[in-house]
Structure formats: structure tokens, C-alpha cells
Amino acid sequence: MENQIDESVKFLNKEQFETLYQISRVLNSVIYEDSLIQETLDLVIKVINAERGLFVKYDEPAGRFDIIAARNIQQENINDLSVFSSGILQKVIERKEPCLYHDVQSDPSVSQFKSIQIHNIKSILGVPIKRGEKVWGVILADSMNNRKEFNEGNLVFLDFFSNMVSLALDKITQMQVLQDENIILKNQLESVKTIPELIGKSPAMQNMAALIHKVAATDATVLLFGESGTGKELIAKAIHNLSIRSDKPYLAQFCGSIPDTLLESELFGFKKGAFTGASNDKKGLFEVANNGTFFLDEIADISVALQAKLLRVLQNKEIIRLGDTQVIKVDVRVITATNKDLKQLSKEGKFRADLFYRLNVFPIRVPPLRERRGDVTLLVDHFIKKFSNKEIHLDPKALKILEDYSWPGNVRQLENVIQRALILCDDGRLLSEHIVIDEDTEESTFKGTLKEFEKIILKKRLEEFNGNRTLAARSLGVSVRWVQLKIKEYGESI
Image 1 (spheres, one colour):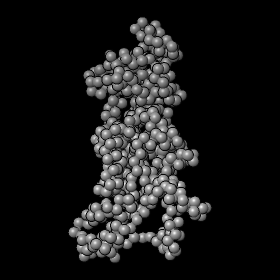
Image 2 (image 1 turned 90 degrees about the vertical axis):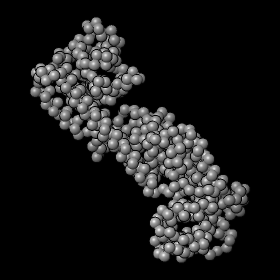
Image 3 (image 1 turned 180 degrees about the vertical axis):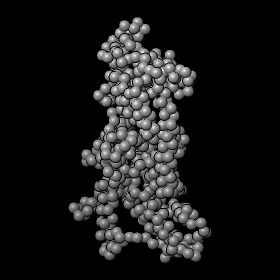
Image 4 (image 1 turned 180 degrees about the horizontal axis):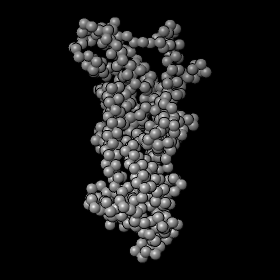
């Protein structure tokens, strides 16, 4: 083996040695396969005076080739695999050894390939990328003009290059797996920190639980809607855990109040050089969540441009990284959530109607805490155990305050109030004076008549549900007709 290597080295010139050294530095510095190959492919094309270079991954079960990188001498990407010779690629796979075709037009063993004739290819170098005994992929370089550089020396150079790439692929694949796992674990940790367990035995919760079980058994896109603080991310996680994707990644991304470019790079990833500071390729969360579930919270806040890209994911199951042209296929179940009326926003032209209908395949309304008052005691007990390792007795007067309050901030607000009360409580008894509910709302300081108070409440509910009378009526426990009559009665002042 050593003698074979010694003999092969004789074919390499100084420029090829220097290029191999440069390539080895690149292989040790980058993270992702496509970035690795793209940078090194440019070096290969230059040193062997080829016109084009191709790196493909071989999918043996499907019997097809997938482009990892394809470049021309101008350092431009080539996205169409059909412009290269599939016949030569197949020959390299079958032979599992380097192939040199100095003049393919006059070589009877390959000249019959259609792609060679159509694209007038003159010379080809092809070498396999091996991982163990199997061929992982193929590196190919060709020319439509120059034949003199397609010689034994450049074939040896390309073979050295393929061996270096083969060694680097193991490291990069392992790093990709670790990075994906790291993102998933961080995401799951954040979810555990901020979201309590799904708790409640009220009719509203039982009805919602039935819907969760039904939709979890499918792969349908789910839209969760309801007020802030009701635990929509918890519902999304429950759907994932009950689905056939439960052993696959679950990721969550908050979409509100995040700059458009930052959110886009998080969701779809980016190529090196896509913008200032993009020093390496970065996977987007859609790629990391592949085969799993991706939860997008506050979906109504994303820009129209991002809405179009999300629609592409739902329709075609594919993404394109920022600064790239390569299409990446993803298989992700999407669950979204909002506290706004998406249907009304779509009518107003503020949210794409086609995206709304894609997201609204299976809508689930998450009830506010005021509609499930019977669950308050269960939630309070849960939060006491969560935030205290001591046995705490809840005074009946304190419980009545908690049960009677309307909880505009829902479960999240209740959690904060209990955590604060436990800090104030120091003798094992949680009393009414420990229940501190900050209120700076108009309702809390109101001193007027019942009719005036009724008007304030109705106005706030209509604003909360973006003018939707049905949702406002449901939240108040009244009929839609009652709301309509009151709007008519109060006129423009509401």
C-alpha cells in the first residue's frame, strides 16, 4: 500500500501539493458538507484546469444522485444535474475506482451516453468518495474544450482529494448530529422552564383534550388560537407527544417582535457570506426539525415576505437558505398559534388568505382561564408544589379571591401570582393578604355606573378580538345578538 502511495505522489506537482494543503485547512475549519465541498470544488477546478466540477451524494436504495455542490470555472453554482453525464457517474459507482476519459467522444465504451453528445463533453475525470466499503458519492470534473490537462497526474490529485473529503465527512456528520441535538435540547429546556403541565378537568379542558387526541393521530397542520397566557405551546407539545413523530425532534419558535431578517435566518438558515457576520453555513430550524414537529407561536406577527416562504414549506415541503439557490426538502409537521383573528386579518389584507387556509386545517380554541374556573384549584395546587418544597396550606379566603378573579393574563398570570404569594408566605399558610394582583386597568379603578362599566368591558373585548362579535360574545358568556344590540345602543362611542 505504501509503495502504491509513493508511486502516486510522483504524479503530483508543486501546485497540486499546495492546493491539497489548502484544501486540508478548509476541511478542518468548516462545518457543513455543502460549504465544505463548494469551497474545495473551486480549488479543484482551478488546479486541474477543468471547466466544471460536481460533487454528488449517491442514494443507493433509490438509485439516484443528489447534488451537494456543482460549480463552473466562474465559481457559479450549477443546479441542474442533467447537464453532467449520469452514465459516467454510474460507471464510477459500479467500478468503485477512479475513472479517466481523455477523449470521451471517441471512446466507444462511453461515447453513446446522451449527455456527452448533447453537451459536447470532451474529457472527464471521476473518482468515488468511499465510506468504508460503500461509495458515499462521486466527484467529477469535465471539460468541453481542454483535453491535455485530463491526465494521470490530475486523476491522482482528484483521488487524494476524495480520500481527504471522505475522512472529513465522518467528522462533519458527527458534528451535524451533535449540533442538531444541542438545538433540540435547548429548545425543549426552554419549553419546560416556561410552560406548566397540562392541568384541568373542566368541560372546556375535556373538550379540548378530545380534540388533541383526535388530531394527534393524524399529520394535519394545527392552528391554536386563544388569548395570551393560555398555554398554547403546551398544547402543541402535547399533540407532538401523542403523535407518531413523538420520538422525533420538537422545536418551538416565538415569532412576535423579532426583526424580519433575524427570524428568517432562524427559520430557514443561511449560506456563508449571505450577510455580514455569516462566517459559516447555518442550518435553519426547519431543517433541524426534519421528520418532527415545529411550533410557530404568534404566527400573525410575521411579515408578508416570510408568509410567502412559509407557504412554500407547507405546499412543497421545501426551503431555501438565505443566500442560497439550492432547494432542501423537509418533512415537518407545522403547528401554529395566535391570539389574533387570522381570518379577519386575511380579509383586511394583513395576512395571506392562502396561508391562513393552509394553517387552519384543524383549528383548536384554547379556552381562557375565566371559562374554566373549576380548574383554578388544581392549577394553584400545581404551582404551590412547583415553587415550594414545603407543605403549604391555602386559606379558603385566599382561594375565593383566586377563583373569583377574571384572570385577563390567564394561566401565566395565575402562576406569577402564586409564585409571588409563596415568597410572601413564611409560616406554611397562604392567606388572602399574600394574594397580590397588580391591576392598572380601567376596570380596577372604575367608580361609575353599571351601564358605563358594561360599555367599557364590551369595548375592550371587541378590541381584544379585533372586532369579532362572535368571539367577544363567547368570552362574555352572552349571545351574539346581545352584543349586536349593545353596539347599536352605544353607537360610535364603542
